[in-house]
Length: 157
Image 1 (cartoon, one colour):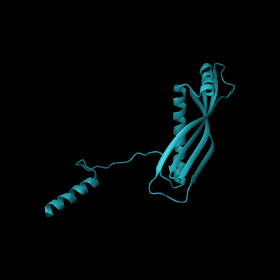
Image 2: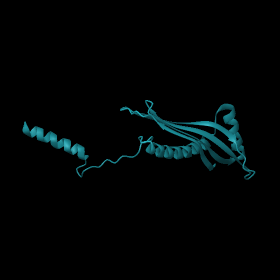
Image 3: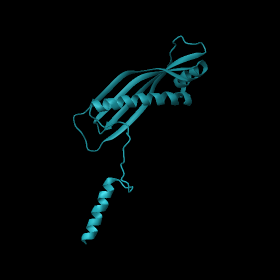
């Protein structure tokens, strides 16, 4: 399987004027449709267009980011036919092909949602890496400061 195309068809990002101290962010992705999409490629291969909907919700009712789009897959003709037929009849798709396609969609959507969240002055919808600086003794600076305070209290007693 090869991903030969990707595009967003709808981007919505909105933020409520109020903020809340307790914030919960959930991200969801769903397939909207799967259809054959002939582009006149090699006769042994076929293309499949997979529609998706991605949403980041900031609860309680603080903001939402919604992204809709399509990813275009180039597959062996037999696999493409099974892909479209399986989705249309049973809402089931080949796992290997779908895994690669969904990972690509998530990569693109997470980056776009991160940029939109920045523009709306919202926290990142995905966890970002954090740095934990430690002193040569092995503990974080805040922990060292707490240890020194505890030692001073013990010394005063």
